[in-house]
Image (cartoon, rainbow, N blue to C red; front, side, top):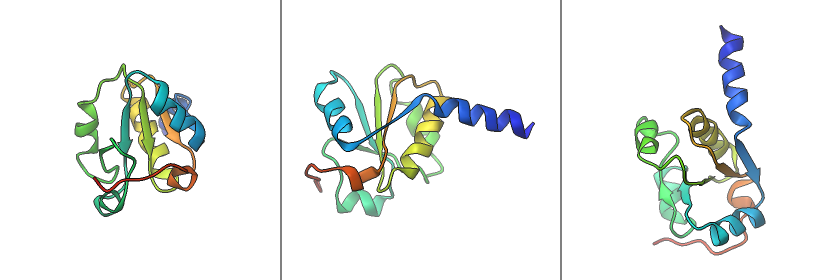
Length: 118
C-alpha cells in the first residue's frame, strides 16, 4: 500500500515543471491567462509578494478547498520563499487534475523583479 501511495505522489510530481526565475517571469508576461499563487504564510505574503498573486497558504487546513475553486485548464504558477512549499503544493494540484503547474524552483531567492505590498 505504501508503494502505491508513494508511486502516486512521485507520478504526480512529473506534472509539476520546476522553472527558474527568468522562465517564471516569461510565463507571467507571455501566457494569455495564468493563475499566480503565493503559498507562503500570511505574514510572509503581507511583507511582500509578486504583484497579482493570489494568497493560498499551503499550511492552511482549507488549502484544498481554496484550490478547488481555481480553473484546472489555466496554467498555475506557484511560488514560496525557497521553492519547497510551492513544489509540494504543485504535487497536490497535479493530483487534483491540474494539467499545467509551474513551480519557481528556488522560490523568491531566484526572483529578480520587484515585489509589492499591495
